[in-house]
Length: 298
Image (cartoon, rainbow, N blue to C red):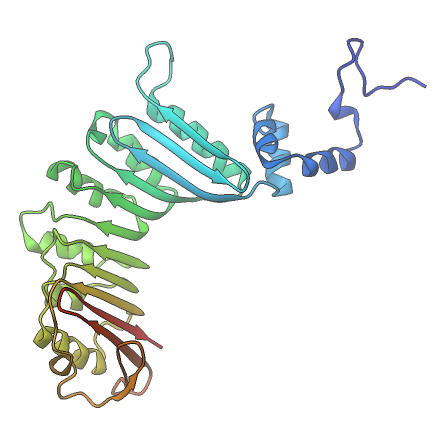
């Protein structure tokens, strides 16, 4: 009987195996080998995707002086860099898109965990980049303060919609423009100290989770927020954390509010909305250097 799985030079003919056996061989490969196998042909790519054997921990894209793609798997790590290269016919953007499409296909996902823009990102065709990522799911969008204001604005106003936005500065001249960013529906938004985030901004923010660092909110404003929440304000809010670089008076924060206090690793307060549909749990950790205000809706 002729062994059809062997060529004249002794090479193994993988595709001569029964389909079921081919799939079993692929499953036994390490994930880095499965990843390499997916580039062999369109059929190999399809096999890896259909088997759903490659698992990814994170996928991150950095756009700065060069474009880089970082992908972490269970047993290996991939780092690819795309820059201008006269020897290559395709642009850095198109090479990035090709690799991302391949990864997203074999991983059976449309999610990019982190998309980060930093200094010199405008060296690349941002319109193309906006269009590509506008049709994919971005979990976290980061725009560093090093990005010029004009470019920063174009990124925030682009078709890219992220589940989480890390906002490190206000690039707008008019306060109403940054408020258009606050009112967008997101799972989470992080407000960094470079942004003047006031009570009115907090009340119009539609994110489920709001994290404020270096807050300028006073005890009176926090008290006002709690009272408005009790009356039905910020209905989408699930969690609010505030870091304030000063000592807050906890009694002033809860002044005039009916609550049940529990002493447990800081001051803990439990109170309800006026309509009885939700309960709020407030935990305050107060010190001379920094105060933490942690509010959860249950």
